Length: 557
Image (cartoon, rainbow, N blue to C red; front, side):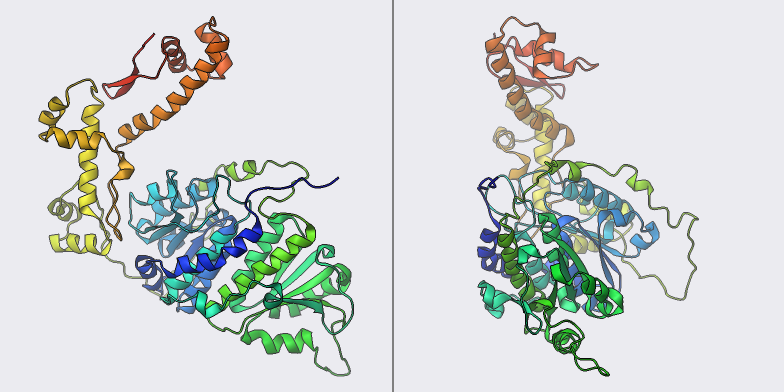
């Protein structure tokens, strides 16, 4: 049975976007992120992400370790096995997209509880409300929003594609402060320029779609690329992938190849550092005692090489690996951005399933496992400032027990936009008064708040997201929770009325309870949904007012 044709964004389209992605990274302002990553490099760094961002964090950890530090790239579940004491003595970096998944909510919540000043997050700029940002902004300014490239359209590809390149470029620039990436690489997306595939010495090799086991060998700069290749292959369902560094392969793992040579391939990621070792071990299998050609001559070999032996080597290999992966996908006649799913597993369900009890898993440090005090002293940390945008500089100094110049320096170093926060506080004052009684004259609101009528009109005509910080700065004040809930309820009620009117046009004589059943709305204990339906039965168009901080309907039958 022929496969159905798949429309929309395809993996080959992501390849065409690679130069744009690297140019995007070159133009970024990464100074604040760079400071978080580079300063205090003697403090360990935990990097948390899931899915496609994992390989980018492998790269970040590798770069951090080249800068005299110690770092680990981990999944959110692995965070549950790290003690609070360890998290407190480290930096914590979280990378996510819209920041609203189960994994991101757990990592951001625990990190900000245990180590608020040592936590940072990188998120993608999107229109949705971001849980990670909302959590971090209460305790720190170390959150970074970057509008990395994603395909056009509502549905993002199933596997991470071009955004991964963007993240690699972001970390490269943040650590190296080098604004030239694309020109250094001289990108050529022709497969012949990116990899070779053939027998080790001589003989026939299987077609790529006949290979069941991709045995990937890496070292140093190529580890993040190997990680990304494994992720793409498994998420696309093409074949099994084994990851191993060159030295560990020597400790017995070659036996698997010996038993499964007919449907396996060695994928070698090579920088100048590994060339001689790979040549001696595999490519030429140097004479040893009375042995020649230790590995069979027809061993299938894929070579992906770079002439760089520096951080940019990873990006060079990453680009070439993506081209190789595209050739694998074409050989399987499948589209990685929307892979075949023969058993019909709902792709949305696994990711949205919470790991219940996760916050209770980290039992280390509670008496079950005990460490001992050594001679190393903990890192000296600066005074922790508890920042409240509602307070004046003088009030902040008094509440934190520091001087006014200390607070001013904190505001400057954290790039806090005080003017923007003042506007947001005025916005909240106006709206909180307005929702007390939206039918009161604007002049009355202005008198109560000691503002001009024009000022009141101005703030009632905008949304919180319209109050943006100055470029390069951040805002710490947020929309009042009550106002936000009321404003966000209105679009949902519009949609509910539209559904009701659609059913009402076909069934005008139903009772309120019958409408509830048709609409699949629960008859909740408070009777809210029943009250909404009762009002909808008397409405032709959506009208409402605010009274005593609540939204009330205006019947217009």
